[in-house]
Image 1: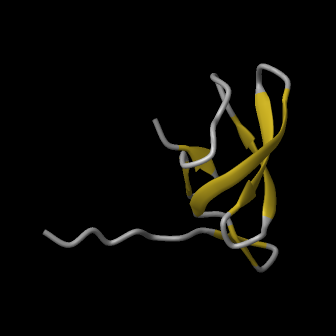
Image 2: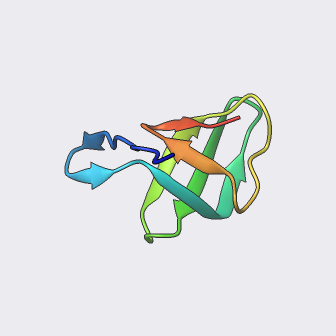
Length: 61
């Protein structure tokens, strides 16, 4: 079975990917760096960890 992951692009930045590191988490949002090197702020109800996935700008559970 093939998964087709769609990517949302905001201001030319692809916000779908795997988290490489978590720079900051305040209980509601997280600043993360994706494996592609892009930094993005995403809404987060729990602290993300490296290896978690961001899909279309949202933390995937």
